[in-house]
Image (cartoon, rainbow, N blue to C red):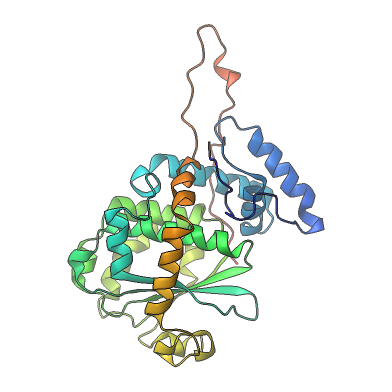
Length: 299
């Protein structure tokens, strides 16, 4: 069981739900409580997953179940979530991960990711996926219910040596999680400063990408200022906000100070192991989980 407030650290009480969806959130939360293998999920989780799934009840159930299963079955990514561990620190010191301060007119948050150290030996792919998921969980906590997210991956400095360090197991977990379980509305993914070997990258990941996610991808050799406009960007790209390195350092410090215990506590957000029935008890005494899965609706 968790001891802290999830998925929003500073919101232990349920967030206000739009009136037209309040009954649905209540119903999903009752369903969650009726699942003996979901011991740690809150009413705010019900709200978050329903919102991410465009208020579609069955999709929200499947996404939440997939979330719990992936967390349980991928301990290399979702257990021991210590932001001060050597592997996570190595990733955070070799990358810049920032949530940009200004949202779009639609209310979308812009997330920007790039390498800060281009030495491929500084990348452990499983630790990179772990760190990325931790950063995003914290951002969900900071933002609350966000209308949508636009992601900018900057490939400047990415080399073939980085591609050689990709591990298929963590990659498969990451792609399944982002497409089927991550409780946000993903609106667009821009790959900027696209590397000359992007076709090799896509050959690796395309078998794992569903058509909905593929439709969100946009590649360009230009920088982010050509895509999202300088008014949303740091000074690195002619915008009004602090440099990427400064924002990364500030947000990294927040993870290390305000969110270290919260992230460790979040390891409990997973499907509990199956319990063996007592001798003579019916095997049907434990309700089986939903067996069918389908990806999130992304619009």
